[in-house]
Amino acid sequence: MTEQVVFYTNPMSRGRIVHWLLDEIGVPYETRIISFEKGEHKAPAFLAINPMGKLPAIVHRGAVVTETAAICMYLADEFPAAGLAPKIGDPQRGVYLRWFFFGAATFEPAIIDKMLARPPVERKSALSYGSYEDAVKTLETAVTPGPWILGDRFSAVDVYVGSQVHFGFMTKSLEPTPALQKYADRCSSRPALQKLLQGAR
Ligand SMILES: N[C@@H](CCC(=O)N[C@@H](CS)C(=O)NCC(=O)O)C(=O)O
Image (cartoon, rainbow, N blue to C red):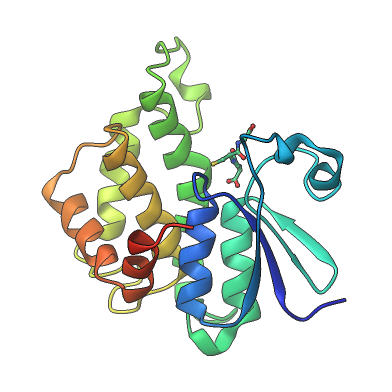
């Protein structure tokens, strides 16, 4: 059982979010690149780690963690010295959890459906995000006035939600409104993200 985090990723995946977070935390970790081209993500060796055959994944102290939001939350809690997660009992913990889950369960499906130009459904109330417009408007309230989702405090939830905003801009599934653009720019000013953008891995 190793104390070092083993990080399974591909540069063209949500693994970039975990990569940014690991570099914010600043502990050593071992990266294992899984090739999509070679189909390594659907090969038995990786399916034994994540039966979904999807990246990213981490293994830490013998436990597998998948799902990008869960990995980010796990790492921020496991390495408290980085100060990237409010502790249980801190009133900001609820705000932090709220926007992590909003990012994963509400905002991400909204922008992915937009990116894929999926036809509208009749029963919007059955969708986790209701309407794309409501999801985007609500996200704007999370990053305004800022600078971060927890106000003056940068945290792991900014890594997660900020990455989704960047992804939305890149795929043109999200309009760079002034509030979102300013937030994305603040995220881009983080040295750990700059390092990642300069030398993709
Ligand atoms: N819910 C998962 C989604 C993971 C995911 O869809 N990963 C993509 C790359 S971003 C993947 O591995 N796709 C390969 C495939 O499904 O074949 C998470 O948030 O980590």
